[in-house]
Amino acid sequence: MNAPLDLRHLPPPEPMQRILDALEALPARACLVAMTPFRPGPLLPLLEANGWAWRVEDLAGGGACIAVARRVDSALLESAAMPATDGATARA
Image 1 (cartoon, rainbow, N blue to C red):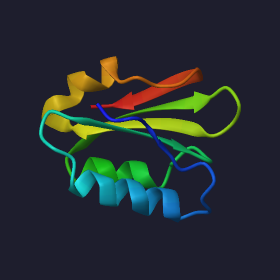
Image 2: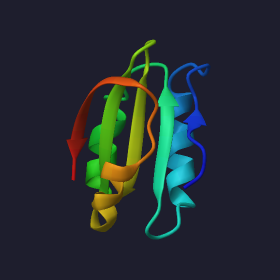
Image 3: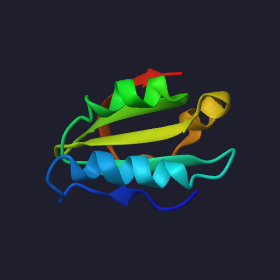
């Protein structure tokens, strides 16, 4: 797994677009982890509609961290390395 993408410094909708772009190149049996300035609410329905599973956690210092994998690889989300968080929401 690669280091998390740190997108917290970008204004909306750039974090969402960069995540979608990165997912296009994501190899099979891999997980993408990204830190965003806000909880990525508008991204979640797009992920679900396109066959992705996700896990989102609120970061202790603000923002959120999202892990995304293909639905068939959703077990990878449990072992995704995510920074210190305040809580998680997941959808497989």
